[in-house]
Length: 248
Image 1 (cartoon, helix red, strand yellow):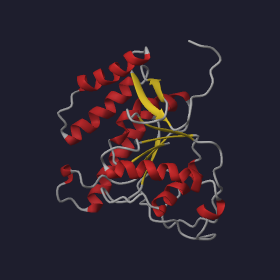
Image 2 (tube, helix red, strand yellow):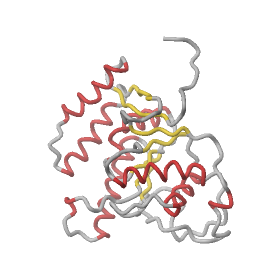
Image 3 (cartoon, helix red, strand yellow):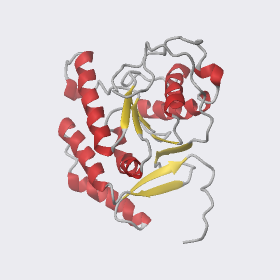
C-alpha cells in the first residue's frame, strides 16, 4: 500500500508499485486528501474536484495494475491526529498490507509529514480490535468519500466487525538524507515506462516545466548509485536491514 497526501505524490515510487503489481502482488494507492488547493482547479466546486481526482486515481491505478482509495482529510489542513490515523487503520484492517510506502518524516509540507505520521500510527491502531471496532458492531465508518470504485470500507456502510491486522508491516519512506534509517534501492528498469507515463500524465495536468528527460535522468542517477539502469530509493524504518545469504 502506498499512502500519500496528494495525487502526484506517488511519482517517487510508481515504478516500485508497478513492479509489485506485475509480480502479482495486490497494490493499493491511497491519498489522504484530494489535493483540492491546486491552482489548476480555480474556483471549481468540491464536487467537480472530486470528479477530476477520481479520474486521476483511476487512470494511475489502471496504468500500474493497482486499486485506489481517497480520503478527504483536507488539503493543507491535516493534523496528524488520532481520528485521521483511525480512518487509515480501518483501511489497513481491510486491505491487510505487508508493506507501506509513504513520505519522509521531515518533508517541508505539513500534509506530507502528517500523512507519514498517521501511516505509521495506523499500523499499531490496526492491531487492536477494540480500537478499529470501537464504535461497536454495525456502526458507520468515519467519513471517507466513495471515490474509489474498489471494495474498501466506505463511510455509511454497515460494518459489523473488522478483523485486526497483526502481521508485520515493513514501513518504507521516501529517502531523506537526514534519516537515521537504512536506505533501500529498487530496480525499476522493467517498469520505468509506467513510471514515465504517470509522471507525464501529471505533468500535462499541472503544466510543469519538469521534462521527461529530467525525470529519466533522476531515475538513472539513482540507478548509477545502485548498479542498475533505473532505480527508486527509500528509507526502511528499521534499525538494520535483513540478513542476506551471501555478500555481493
